[in-house]
Length: 254
Image: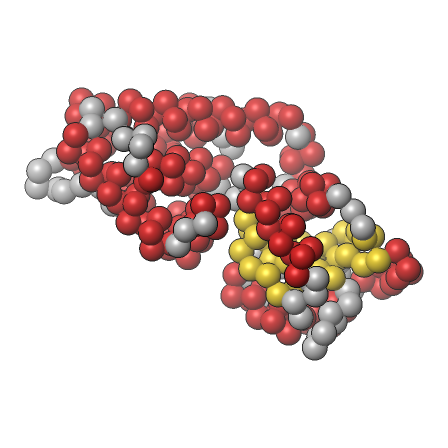
């Protein structure tokens, strides 16, 4: 999952990016800011993979944001990829942005799907393989769905959909397990218009019901000790991790 912070003074533009990202399935707009000062705080807080940055911002402009980010190159955190935007009349300023560390420049207006494609290509060059990537994502989703059905996870439970999303995300990006509460649950919540707390509870409920009423033979095969009476049920994260590891091997995800 590609985490993106959008820093742009136009609220409607930010909403459009968020909606398109929500539908994409592999990009998560983790935060939005309408001025550069707040943008810098959110970038520091969320450590995104990429930033979509407007050059002309209140408080601190895009050039100031680029300068401050360049000064943080010695930080242990990896610097995000920066995609800057501006209107055609200011095209001559893009070279200045590039000299300050921008990775890519786009002139408004532009197609938001194309913008997100550029984000993918900056963060992961293999994203340029488009159709192959889509096919791999579809294969992962089908395998996740099959595994959940075999275990007997009730498909009418809200937690079923959340589990399916969580496992698919972790198959593609195992680092999300390092921040289940901070990154994974909020990502799923944003997709479904819910809250991280509700996502966590719904997943836990689906797992508990599955462990009690599901396909016990398959559960024992997949989780082994995790369903022993003395060991209790697997946690949300261990359930997701176990299935994600197996699916990653089966569909040969790198």
